Amino acid sequence: MHTTLAIDCGGGGIKASVLDSAGTLHAQPVRATTPYPLPPTRLVSIIRSLAEQLPRAERVTVGMPGMIRHGVVVATPHYVCKAGPRTRVVPELVAAWSGYDMRAAVGEALRLPVLVLNDAEVHGCGLVTGVGLEMVITLGTGLGNAIFDAGVLAPHAELSQGTVKWGLTFDEYLGEHERIRLGDAHWSRRVRKVVDSFRPVYLWDRLYIGGGNARRLTPSTVARLGERTVLANNAAGILGGVRAWDMVRQD
Image (cartoon, rainbow, N blue to C red; front, side, top):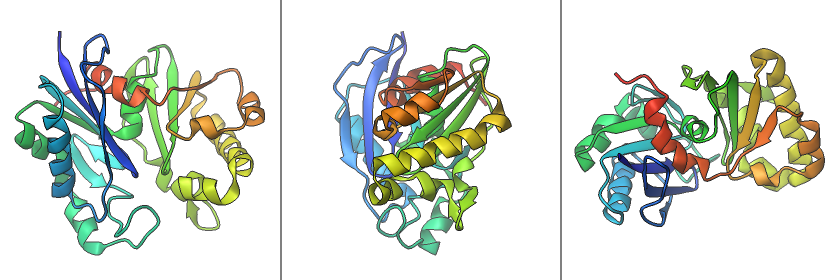
């Protein structure tokens, strides 16, 4: 039975735990606040530190924001900022993260096989049933997304960086900063409008809405999202670290 070190890297916090193939925790999760500025080597150091606080695992799954291809960071939205999301973008951090082989770096640090995916994709791996076309949207620091077809993860599309209104990206329009500014009721209506705009594009069989802010959606908004929509438990980001190994193409 494989044991997996699951690392969930968010804009505000990084958490880790070790689970077996059945999804049973072998230790309580450990956490660290996401520090800024955050060059790649600093994130790898934090992952190593969290791993040292947990039982030894046989493999590692890392979920982090941004476009990740084959374990390499193409772009990441928050970690390139000087003091966290929606602060000044630092050109040196953009250069440091662009093309960074996160899978190789974590593998070298921990001496284990590593899988690195977008964090919403890992979250989705912990949610989907494997039936039909299933879409996952996560609400937290920003917007995350993933698509699964019959339980197989589709190539990633970074919807968060699309422009929605007033020059804002979806990441900014639905992110934590705007939720705090608007209040839950107004922000929830925004979420519903975005979901309604995605619906005819993807024609999903089931939509999951997860992430730390899914619980902030008002009951009236949830009632209008439709019967094919499921509100998800945020713990899926850790369980998904186990299931991801069976849902993605290994290369």
